[in-house]
Amino acid sequence: MQISLLTTVLTLVFGGLFSLSASADAVGEDLPYRVQGNVKNEGVALAGVRIVVSGGGYTAETVTDEEGKWLIGVPEKAGYSVSLDQSTLPAGIAVIEEGGADQSVEIGPSGAVTKNFFIGEGERVVVSMFDQVIARIIYGLNFGLMLGLAAVGLSLVFGTTGLSNFAHAEMVTFGAIAAFFLGGVLSLPIWIAIPAAVLISGAMGWGLDSGLWRPLRKRGLGLVQLMIVSIGLS
Image (cartoon, rainbow, N blue to C red; front, top):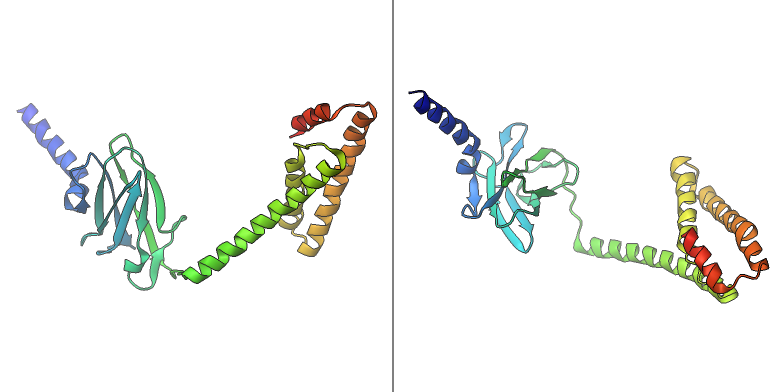
């Protein structure tokens, strides 16, 4: 009698735990692992919201059911990207959690992971392809100019001294940190922060030359020894 009662209780408990899987709009239920969740706005279930799970060369999608639930089976116990198509949300609401509509999850020891999206009132920001291309071009030019500036400095050092300075990147980083500290931490205007960072970086270079490189050159150290010193500074 007691065994029968215990069996009944366990059946009810585990049946409740897996009720989400049973009632959710499911895809790939025959696969060994699953990603599942709910989509609700202030406790109100949102049906018909498109969910896409991808990772490891596998991609599957589904839509939420009338209770806002969804489930997608996955073939491997690994990390996956879960994306919510915000165009399928009702007007006036959006995903408001950090990371937006694209989230990363990891299959847990139980073979399943639950991902619930935080939905609330908000404005969906849609960036056109043209704007994305322009932004990427600007970012690419900005990054390329920074690399070019660093390369010019390295070339000048090598051309005038014959030394391959392995610590040159640290000097460039020092200048960037100085500019960030002056402009970001101290909140100085950019027209003050940048010239001040240039002066500080120049003073740093002069100090290294006076205190380190010049004495070593006076001792007659060769380029190989100086290069080893620069490796130690890097």
